[in-house]
Length: 248
Length: 248
Image (cartoon, rainbow over all chains, first blue to last red; front, top):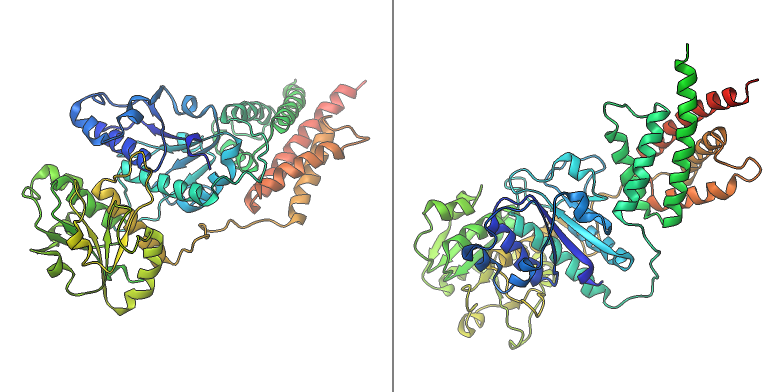
């Protein structure tokens, strides 16, 4: 696995110390690409930088984004972390994620997404992830420090990378990015609203299930095009049906 | 493995914050027994205790020893950690250690020994250990933070204790049979014919693509149900639309 293709996305971290410690944990495990979504002030202060011991380059090279969508738009596989054990569709272990990442990294960039320290990722951002990962912590103290969570996932990815080595025997199919998949989902949202399948007040529940299903399938560009064409045709039928049903 | 028999020994840690963060990491992974050999002053200060978030009990229950010998005297198996890759007899990975620990824990207490932040364990203390463990860090930044090192070993021991093997994942999702998937595809065929997306003379081309896509995703029963409901709604809209378009 090429670890250089793995990106860590920290969403609204509140403590500069944790961001710095996460940068060190990344570099410990051979990861270098860091995204910060709405990071706290104070990252440049000496006491924070000290915690990035030997890894200030990772911190300094971090990219900024104003939303999670923006940070993961170029990724083919987006794994979100959560401490919740009641999420729809269940969660993967870090080890399972690593095995999957090793299989998929040939396709493009992978994103590992971590939420704010106190609350974790909210549902609307968990819903943007293709899979959800939960560390097998003890019920007595399930909450991992942010940098510790980064380390665990990076460690498992590193082991998978070392295990897989330079294996390029399986030719990865071209995969679409999260942004392209979102376009297809947006079209499907419009189509399913037209035919009355989605509750206009809460369309996201079903769309999240479709996102998970489609992301697991790793659609090709051709398949995304097919889905979008299909969505257009459904929307057309839905518009006519609705105009007829609601006509006087 | 009974994790209650695993003891973490921190030898001359220099920063109270690291001791506190290590206590949290232990409790995250279900370990409780902490030994401190010649610890720093200041462990009782609020800023240190805050880092033991939810784990102050581990910190407060720590035993003190004046030497490593004393701290490990009651253990049947002593694993020392090192960042050096030139030690006599070589080093084990955390995962190998965990497998061995799972085998040996029935015999009595196990000790995981960590040295001072800056220097690690010196030779005379490494020599007291039964095996040496080294985390597979990257050469560009091999040095793990103390609490991070504790987390990694505790994590591997926890997985071994839970009986999670090398290649196991989380709960395998219930998979549907090929027959169930075909029912959903049959419904989708009907729906897409109704909305005019499929060529009635050759619908199978597109359906084959959808089958590949969905089969790759390994849908759950719930997802198959969702797809079938969606197909019914699309078919309904398609029937109305067609009747309108073809009406005289």
